[in-house]
Image (cartoon, rainbow, N blue to C red; front, side, top):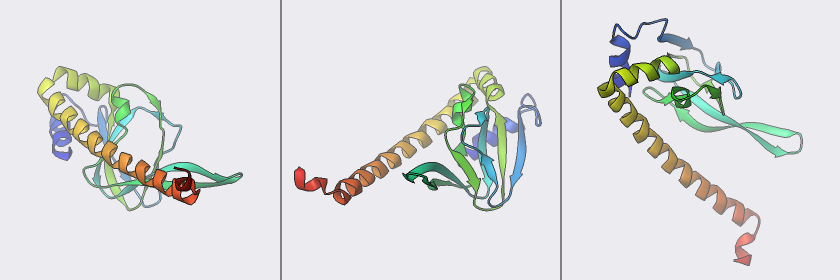
Length: 157
């Protein structure tokens, strides 16, 4: 994905500081908050980030659980390519690094006007999303098995 984005941002018709910008971050910095308006697509150029979710463990006891770590070449915020919506997770820096932040609406128009780049871009998006969905399915299976065992449900099956 990194090389695909690098080719797009090198195009003079996709101007820096209008369509995209570099964004440095530091360890423990929150990149996006759950509930923020999501208008940008992000690609990690260097560093590591963690996607976290809010989990209510017990009444009045909550944790922010890490569900996925992202590194160089990974992306997030892809829903911004289709619509502006609220972020569903918080993304926090694990290390210092740098992102390429891209305006989702401008990128969408660019990809419509450049179908070869659009095809290559979305091919990478779909490939990555399929891998992510497969991993999430395995996580859900593991959590279900753990929950059933922890609550003694297996003896009723």
